Length: 166
Image (cartoon, rainbow, N blue to C red; front, top):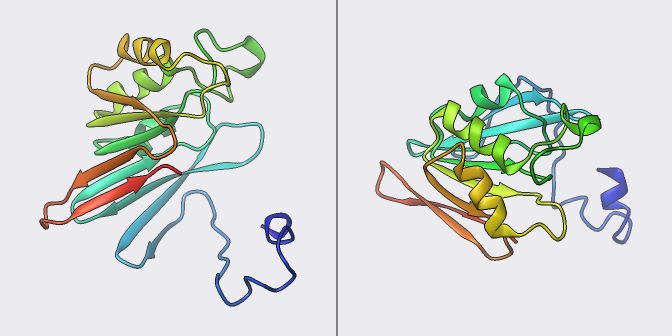
């Protein structure tokens, strides 16, 4: 975080944020949201995130290889934002640490998620091919995250939970 904050004028954001260390496996509240984390496989520590509010659930893998922990994190989520870096197959030296759209689709299917949003596609990856690859494993609603895409999650409390990719 220090490296990111150093990009701006020193101290400019000191009063704008409160940094909290998060340990993988932690559960905590962020305003009206309930957050849960899980340690997911990657070359460096990576905590996947599950956020719930208003009876709806959003799960995010960050950079992650295929894992039963991804499936547990995303269990019955309304939306899974899943890393899908490599077209199938993932190079052997990266298989434990990164996913393909097919891997993301398989995990979405196993978790029983309502919608899948593929992210972190390798530059130059054809989004249509990525969607077809995910569809080989997951039959639900699937999109590729692009700037400006909006995913509304209907709430059981009558409000929408909105997720916008910038």
